[in-house]
Every structure is written in structure tokens, then in C-alpha cells.
Length: 80
Image (cartoon, rainbow, N blue to C red):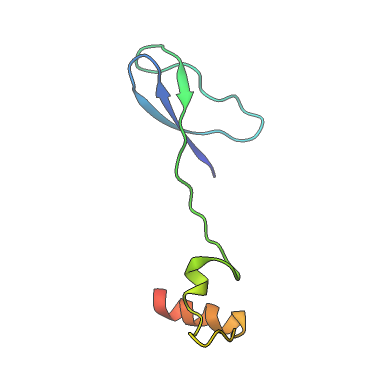
């Protein structure tokens, strides 16, 4: 479920809200009645496959590529 963050333009009060598709986003600050503005938030992203620094750093120095499944399994061992 996406959680959106809003900040009041008047009093800087911050509000978090779940807004489902088809629903109206909150527009009025519950503290002062001012206008709420949607903030940019951080999101969790995991990039999988060749060409990403995290994955490519696991390649051996000789430049030969191992099967992706083998590298993914090794990464799972390292980050568990």
C-alpha cells in the first residue's frame, strides 16, 4: 500500500495518508485548515540483473561472467 506524505503550506504540519486509486487525496490540514502539499518520499527499489553496480561488483576480475543465478545465490549468502 502506498503511503503518501503531505505538508501544510501554512503551519508545516506533516501528515501521512494512504490514498487508493480513485480516492481523493487530503487537501486540508487537520491542524490549521491550510492547504496540504504532497511531498516527495523515499521508495524501496531493488535492481536485479546485469549492469547495476551492486551486481557487477561481484564479477571476478578476469572479466568472465558467471551465470546470474550463481551470483544471485552468492549475494543472498552475503546479505543474509
